Image 1: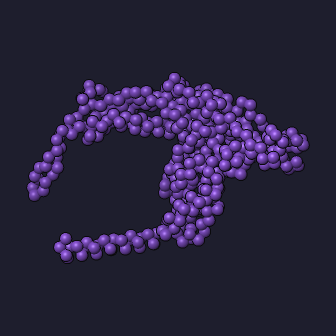
Image 2: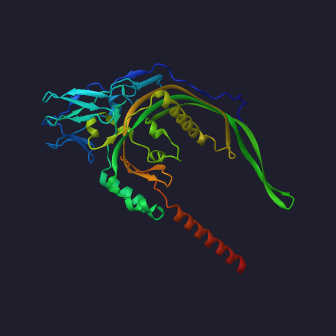
Image 3: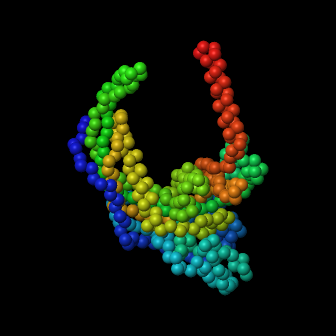
Length: 407
């Protein structure tokens, strides 16, 4: 039925408060020597098959506390107000020293960790592994981590299968150099965001009342009549576990220069199974450091919240079979909570260089939790054009034959 006329409001976006409230996510974290509780060894790494940490010496395994439960992130967010950020999600301080020195508690030697590249280092005297689990202001240590669950052998098979189905059109150099065994496991930095908002959408919707044909000259045209309605939708909305990339390199979605958009196609991740950050999960894998702050990421999260809001109302718009045109959209963000996370991906990358020396980085990526696979491979343009031309030629010939025989 028609709605009451409503004067459209200008699009507004709630601006975040200037001073976020920080909640600690590294309480109880220990820097320095991380030992197995059973035998005291420091050779600790992730057992992908079980998702637990495993001692490389005595094979003892243990689970790390679930981060969502530990940080109380699984409750009702309808009452969330202001901005809450985990201690690993605070703004990066550029002046923070990135080279940290730890004193090995086993032998007393001083060991340096370059947090730009790693959060672990091996003592050069006693060979024990030193770990850094407490957050530092350069963004090196997140609040939580989602462990790998897909094993490398499975990822290799998926990448080989993906490329194998596309090898016919692949560039000859790529086909010659492709080796799925070169896949690498990497933890990519994300922000996991909860948003509590109030939405108001106003616009016009059309409902078709009849359809008919009219004669215009020698041609017939299809016409329709429709009633026009003022449409209003106003409701509270909660967005839970929205993931936003926090690496500036990955945020660049220019498809003419990179294939970063591929990473988005293998989402979502089951972030509810993340655990408290422990650098031992990084053993055997690489990682990227977060280098973007909330002021850079908030507009992205709010835009995505707006997209979710529009999708939310679709089920209530079926009456307007000619569509709805929104003239004003308000998403008043009342509360938001940010937690930084490492999410696991298996990556195969290939650097393509053209005759002019320009390069383009191709990826084949596997979600290391679900196995979802997507990628980009360099094409053999000559073969692609040749096949397209052949298909067009065959289609033309068939069309001429049908005309000749009178179809």
